[in-house]
Image 1 (cartoon, helix red, strand yellow):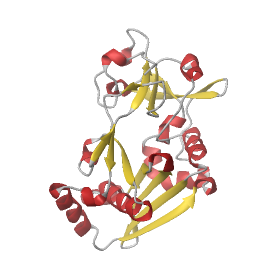
Image 2 (cartoon, helix red, strand yellow):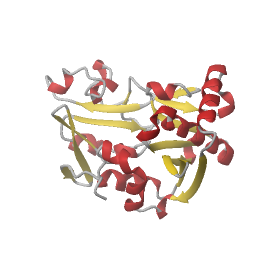
Image 3 (cartoon, rainbow, N blue to C red):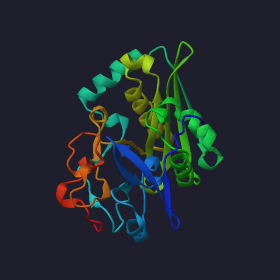
Image 4 (cartoon, rainbow, N blue to C red):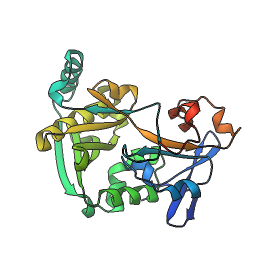
Length: 262
């Protein structure tokens, strides 16, 4: 459990807010927003939240949240990949020709924080996920199923990928991929998406929601999903002035900052 970072936590009523650092600037989020693909917040969350505060992943039918500038990548069905995407998939298949791919399905309520931390490993350490983040995800998944896919080459673990079923949306959502940097030349993170999309199609005949719209994920996406969130930032705050790609404010259009209602 040493890879789970401890950061400041403030609690208002029943809501916990986690402090995060961006370029020396502190902002806040709820632990549910770290790994859970969908949130359905109450108005009290926004009333109690310290500023600056960001929330992503709000469900589409919530009255809260604005449409964000970025969306999610979705693979509706593997057989819908276009010609260029199929070429890329076949290239990856060749690179993983000698790999052994294992998939396991377990009830979410059987997963422990320690087991989840072990699966996340270096990925959780690199992005400084906290115990509260993991606990929030396990609450989200306790009535769902977790799909774990592992790829091995010559006895080495190349990637461990975890997804969760979201039956109400007829989809499986990718949560994280802990991939081995020693195998970066064969793109294990991308191939994990291929394996998870195929598994989702074969097991349930549903789409695979790859996650937030990053360039490398677009290579395999066959559709895009709108996302909704809230950014509450005091006027003139330093985070508004930074244009860095990893700044959370960049996911919102300037005119939508401090808007709460849809």
